[in-house]
Image (cartoon, rainbow, N blue to C red; front, side, top):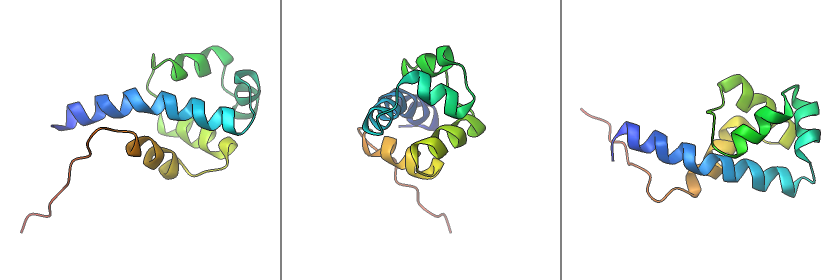
Length: 90
């Protein structure tokens, strides 16, 4: 797996994680949009995998969901088929 493959795989699993967390928090797309200041149509696009969120957008969404952006990404990583192991080169 190379960096491109890893990024594509993360982009496939992140939308499902966003949906799971939003639903678990009892938020509708409209509520998430209102609380993040993002358009509802953009929330829909993110959840369908049609757009990759920026760091700022991840931060807004994570804040409203009550987790850190890093935790959001970690949760998505857990859903990935394989995560590359990075080795420190000497």
